[in-house]
Each structure stands twice: as C-alpha cells, then as structure tokens.
Image 1 (cartoon, helix red, strand yellow):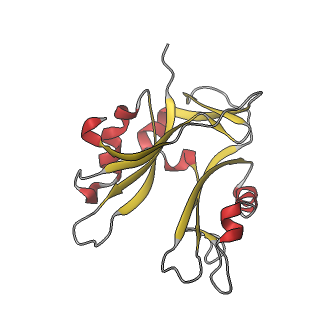
Image 2: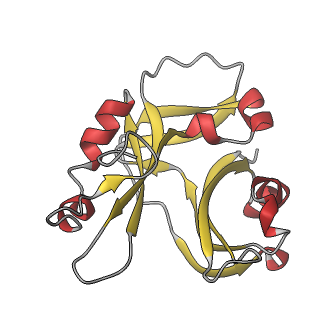
Length: 185
C-alpha cells in the first residue's frame, strides 16, 4: 500500500508590484508531489497561480530520526517534535540577508534554537553588529521557528500527525533543486 509522505517545498513567484522574486517554504502531505498543487495555490493566493517550485524533498529522515505520516487516531508516545527553522545571517560588504533552512527534531523550541546556533551557517554569517538570527521569532537573536505540525494546512492537521521514531539507519533525503513549473509536475 502506498504511504503518505511529508513534503517540504521552496516556492517562488514574483507578485505584481515586486522587483525581485519572493520565496516561501510550504509543507504538505500527499502520496506524490502533484497531490500538493491545490494546497500550494491556496497557501499563496497573492501569487495568483503564478507559482513555481525552486526545490523540494520528501521528509523521511531528519538527523537520527525516521519521519512518517500516520492517521490522527494513532496513539503516539514520542516526546520529540519536528521543527522548521529559517536561519538568517549577513556577510561583510554584501547587501543581502542570507538564509539557511533546516529541519530539526527536538523536545522543545529552546532545544531547537540551541542546536541551530551550532550550525556552520550561524557561526559564519555573524560579524560586528550583524548577528545571525533565526528569522521571525524573539527579536534580533531568534526570529522563523515552527513545529511542522502547526504549519500544515488545517484540514491535514485534523487528519494526520507525524510519527518521529529513532532510526537504526539513516539516509539523507534527496533534495530536488531547479525550476519546477506546477503545470509540469
């Protein structure tokens, strides 16, 4: 039987009135990538359907954990949660805020933030007054961190949950990078 999967997508579009392409991250559940297209369009209505995918992955393994999608009726005992973090940082003489997106399995947000500050990105994109930060949470030091379960489309949160189990063996999820038109998926 085919297994439902958690997907992580980097979406791109250039909304009317903008000078540069904008990006956002979307998480969805489906059997295959094309199952997510209706939810993608609902997620970013300002794009008026002119969206594309710049990168995506099936989320099967994060750190030393196996991630699976199960019915909401299943009883789960794992205390860990899967978090999405968007790290932001700067480099001298570059007018750009660089971003690094990570998934992390932790027991709470504080633990996830502490782990993010140990990444190479965080350590190498900080200088003088331009401190690296986790975008959109807690001001300058810690700003985008979300439990994945909280940012899934509402109807999916009602039906499914994520099972996070220690993995005896792990592999790295395949990242699919490039320009993927929704009409060709």
